[in-house]
Image (cartoon, rainbow, N blue to C red; front, side, top):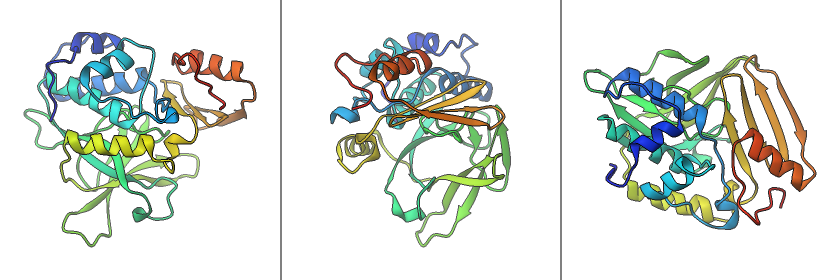
Length: 276
């Protein structure tokens, strides 16, 4: 799926602070996935200006690897896919409908990007996803298998089958919410492969459609070992590892820019206003 000639793997691995032995195996997949998830923030600053972010390898490296920026699902998972391909793994794009907070599975279009990863010697493929901007996101990849629960870096996930009239099985990734406590569906998908050209169209639609949530307000996320940070519009929230969440509303532009740069590690472009 990925043309990696213009991708700088060395710079990427340095950016995510991973210096392990480069092998096409499950341990490498898990380690690189987790390092990426804990190093690169989620953000939608380009769509707020009406611009679709470039998914070209050299542009992703310039922005997210060499620049102090993040991205959203197409950028994150394209970047990870480039790295995994260079490491010798087999990567296929998948597309899902985000059902977290949705009234029904069909109420949102299939616009979220994930990766199906094949590992030499492993009988099962894995779902990798470093671009889902929510506290229930994967920190480590999980086997694509129904009926199993997986604990990855303190987060629990499973796949369930959903009722569906189509020819392919419809799966949902669920995360366990310790606060409720209950399993919560994150997104639904089939195993149909999608090409890079499909994601170019999705990317343009999500970044430029005036009804897209990503064109309306800032939406930033950052995950560390100890906490999950989010900025949704002017509301900043922090969720600790024990599930306790605090939030406050930002009212001053200077405060918002400082918080984004210091807490999220994002260099706000000159002239961009975080609070509109």
